[in-house]
Amino acid sequence: MLEQHIPIDPERSPPSLRPLRKNGKEIARIRQIGRHLGALFEALSHRVKPGISGVEIDAFVAEYLESRSLTPALRGYDGFPATCCVSPGSIAVHGIPSEEPLPKGELVTVDVGVERDGWYADAAWTFAIGPISRERANLLKGAYAACLAGVKVARAGNSYRSLGRTVASIADRYGLSLIAECCGHGIGRRLHEYPVVPYHVSGRRTPGVETQLDQRFEVGQVLTVEPVLSLVHQTLTTGERTSGLLGSENSPTAQFEHTVVVGRETGYTLTEPATPSVDFPPYF
Image (cartoon, rainbow, N blue to C red; front, side):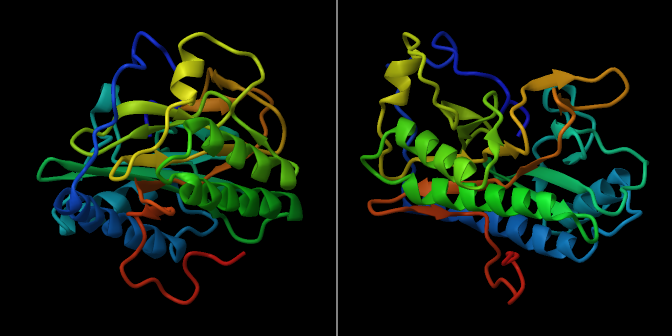
């Protein structure tokens, strides 16, 4: 998503605000469009091959959304020129699709936001371009596990801090690092709603930020779970000759994102295919 790198700002997201809880009918509307995103990524999993370009991926996504009467939420957002973000190699987030062919052995993250009838859903998936190294396969596994663990923790009564700690523990288990600037966000009637939800919880206490981290999830709250993991510790930086935000150490990253609704016992994903095939989501 296009603002995930923005850190928590108490002025921008005052702790006194409460998240917008959705009722059953509203959640069903979001799930209805979210399932199209899950099906889109399943379709893409069969098309992302060595030699495909970001422009070709973007064209396929645009045609797919149009055929299902879905509006690309990212196109035009803060001037973004494409239907989706395509972030290969060392580009961590916000990559603008290019005509350069994607090489074998690389990773590429495709991030798509959609709108229909005033409701939004947001999701991302990292694909392997042909066979990949054991190191990159571990990165994919860790990023996928971190996202799913975060979904489960997004349940009523848990704090935002607990989600961050859970995601960080998965990253540690796989020997990976979280990119601290990347956060989740509320979603529903807008692409980005209150609150901002961080995944990197440092030991340094910051007034205002701490208050927000201690807030607790509420039933019916809808948000994105979308941690970005890396092989090494790195931050985000801009590149001179490339689009998007790069990892400062030029190391590959991986990200899986779901739109999630908070339940009493667990979080529930709203961006999975209605009828996933036996090999998707990928069971690494």
